[in-house]
Image (cartoon, rainbow, N blue to C red):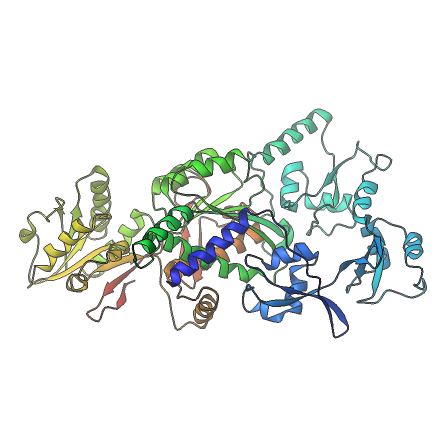
Length: 618
């Protein structure tokens, strides 16, 4: 039931991602400690970011005045205080009221709103020009001042088009994007724009871009700019791109797309059918994993709430095929995207790599383990290990336990037998003296089983491929279970534990052992904090996918902010992160495509007689 409620919550968030409706500004104003605030009651789907945009304040303004938000996420029904910065002047629609903030000066404000100081005192006739402005003082500006500023700044009389391009900043643009689009440096932008600090850009702000090219060369630059907006760019590297000391050199606005198969419509129909049949309501297994992963991401995003970073998150329910992803690409939805998390299925990962022509964009792939993808496609980061690295981990375990007998199970398809060969070769390469052999699973029995086992040692069976038929997997367990006087261990994918009708004693008797990229230290104070936050928000326990989502977001979005959207070029072929869900060791090899990485860390867990799992490797 808790997973069902969580699904409904996630559904509301996805709906918000597609919705174009705005936030209703509160009519209730209060004065606290001499400061004026809106009292806003949070609605479902609202975020600190969306509220900051609606009320024209920064996220820091909201958090500073609501300290609890720094410790726990925003909740529907919560009442918060939002400082009043802009409001309409009483009985006069031609003015807005601005509340002076620390650091504001008359000069900076007049420049910001595009009026002269004489005009300012004409509007604010009650103010004494000999006195400086005070924090929290309320002053008036023309209601159209912001628009007038832009028109004034780029009016034909002021333009010097022979030297500069006059560019109005659009939502999602960063300093890094501008340097790549116009082939200029950060220093050149600062020189042309004395009030620009080289770090922060404001939507609607006009930036002067120095012209460095001849007319013909500039025409090429314009074509490159338009190509960027359609999602096809060339790779121009900045020599200082891997300098992480200045966090905001790439700007502070980032757009992240999350592409995951929530299967909303399919699950809703399934839940309706279950209710009609008086069955316990259950989501699809893949949906539960997806929701856990996404929920971990949501908790992880709170890590950036106090860093003056604007993260625009777009969430899409991709379904199982490529239709919806194709629609997003055709509609140019990823033109300003800085990072994509997903997709989940191999076919979708292949499709987006083949059809979205962006070499300045990384894909964070949470569930795929097809090594061919990272060998053929650049800028893919696999959070899950591929067969080669799982096989290597099992080979290491075998090398440390050479007295055991190792039997690799073969299947009935070319793909299954190819995987079996990978595992066999990996084990053989670690120790050529191991007692190692194949055994074939016919679909109903392990062939010639008695000739493969030995009563004097542990017999370790390795199942390299997933048996998606519950009946067939039950037969494997039953074959091994019937070896009453033998020491047996079965190493297989964790997904085989999802079968609910299999007698748990079968798993215990076969010492069921699974491989995983996850290792959670529940004694770690940070882990306890994460679990507490997760429970408070989602009313259920986090699982390994929740931890993976949290680690992926805090680790890789951090890299995006520091190094820009080609952050993988700064990993120097490997990077390690000690996450709450285990050590993430991203590694690339010579046979991988440019800047593609895989998580090399693999753990082995074994089931004990009291139905708990213990880590046995490393």
